[in-house]
Image 1 (cartoon, rainbow, N blue to C red):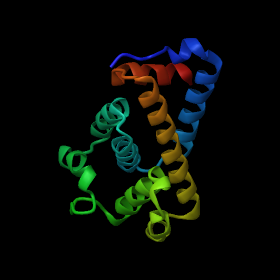
Image 2: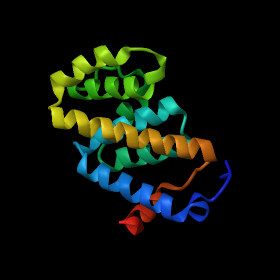
Image 3: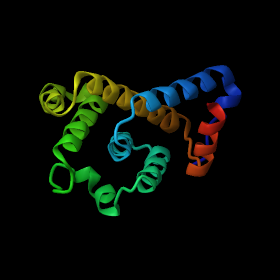
Image 4: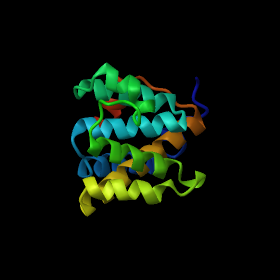
Length: 158
């Protein structure tokens, strides 16, 4: 896929601010690396964001995630390889990503609060919001970049 526009050329200040803010929020809201990447990967799968699926699968592997757990992520409810904490995070991710589809967030929140402190709930929700924002930017503008290029851009933005 070819990008429709160069976002950083079209709105350099805004895109640098968005990138910097999302990096800072992600760092502040970090959980165990495997959980963070599973959440980002699952939201990206739901949103059909090839760029972010590619990136976060690579990053999940770099953080020690297994191929089995990456491949089974779309079927996490049926797969026995996820912890209760991961299941709560994935349920909340799906509920927040599919917010307009119904009221699953009510039951997803019950599972969430059983596994996460209030501060962690806020951090997880911010993580979900960040990845959903990046998904919408990437899908909307047809972005697809090599994960090494994205990693280098992150370092340059800090």
